[in-house]
Amino acid sequence: MQGEEDGLSVTIAHIVQKLKGSSLHCQLEKAARGSLHRPDIKLETVKEDIKDFLKASGWEKKLQNAVYRELSLLPGPCHSLAPAEHIKEPLSYIRKAQASWEKRVLKSLNSMCTELSIPLARKRPVDEQKELLNKWNEMGTDEPDLSLFRPVYAPKDFLEVLINLRNPNYDNGDQPSFRSHLGLIQVPLKIKDIPELREFFCELNLNTGQLGVDDSTQVPPELFENEHLRLGNKVLAEYDSAAAQQFVRQGCPTSLRAELWALVLNISNQPEDILYYEQLKSNVIQHDLLSDSLIYKDVKLTASNDDYYFVFEDYLYQVLLCFSRDTSVLAHFAYNSASPPKSYIRGKLGLEECAVVYPPNGVIPFHGFSMYVAPLCFLYNEPSKLYQVFREMYVRFFFRLHSISSHISGITSLCLLFETLLQTHLPQLFYHLREIGAQPLRISFKWMVRAFSGYLATDQLLLLWDRILGYDSLEILAVLAAAVFAFRAVNLMEVTSLAAAEAVLADISTLKVIPLLQIFLFTVIS
Image 1 (cartoon, rainbow, N blue to C red):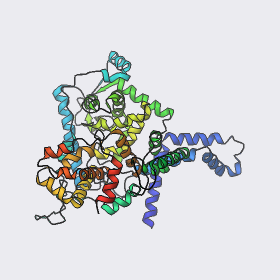
Image 2 (image 1 turned 90 degrees about the vertical axis):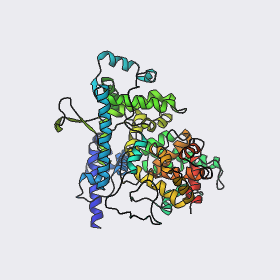
Image 3 (image 1 turned 135 degrees about the horizontal axis):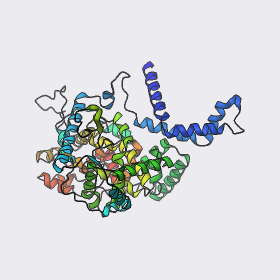
Image 4 (image 1 turned 180 degrees about the vertical axis):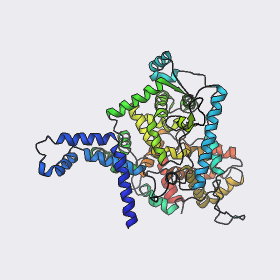
């Protein structure tokens, strides 16, 4: 009991400290001071009167939403004396693997810098600044020569690192037992079993109304949609992040999705947020980074060739270039197993005091990175709001898809969950694919690492992301990946090679996500 109280005190102190440095704190102080001149504020009851005023004027709701956001970003329970590295990642062998991977990625970036004789960063000449400013809204028309640039790494490179991950303290034995995991991921991590998944995703059961399901035996679709829309408007009127998060578990009405997601993420797009975005834009105009070319290259290779997203090319450049300069993103490394890469001022190699984080946000873009932004362009046409929503989605969810960690929503755990679901509940399919050299994870990894962006039709992808936000978890990606294999099981049982298996699963854009998840979770597996 005492330990729980201590933990609660630490949590409260942490949140208070975080909020003290926020603009909300300044606004609350200003509103409270301003209220002192009101006739209904009495000196003898000043504390209670100010509380009542803040409640009536909506500030209490804003504070609640801010606290709720901080709670969602808190790292898992940890001993009060645990060092910072344990909060980032409790398992030492995973910390070592992540550090080794970071060195490899940085080496790749530095070697490209050396080969092409291009500096990591340079100040743009005045003429170049003016030119970029003039074409800021039409950067997609620019065709820089990117032939010599290559992505620093692709998802398949990252998969090989995860496959080779081993716990040195864990003896798997020489002889495989009936409990052995026969997939590619060979680290023992805590993942949910089917009863736990069913309980966790209970709102997805077949008796609960869902947006994204065309027919239901319980309630006519149009009746549920109308009622859900009415309830959605009520949630927005209440301006409550926790209520919005619960609501989106059953899907968002298309007309309300942008507002509901912003409420869940506590994005309000205040004047100071717009100003901050403009400052980032100014940084892009003034300085050219080598990572900018990686962003250009990635957009050209992915989103620009996508039937759904090519029209948003300009938005993608704007958001991603600003993102690379945003030092506020560095705060997420407090609970991310990764550490921001560092470079040195020219001529000062090895001097720690001359080390700088590069790129400034600490995130080196990889092949497919722009696909985290692309679907959001359907929801937000205001660049500053689009930017804020993407940044919040990244620091809450997407960073876990390209860093090595033991977190239950980390990509390593998702891979293990996917393989365990297939091996346990579709053993014939799993063993067949394994025998022909078509390990299922080699096919599904690219879906999960991109959160299915670019693989599903956009309306289906947004319904999937509704649930990621609603459940505050990425585990649904592994469940959906297993559900896709279950849906195509008959065809997959007939293939005789990896290439043939990939062909069967080459196009999943016609699949209906929510019925697929419901059937897999609540009927296929027993």
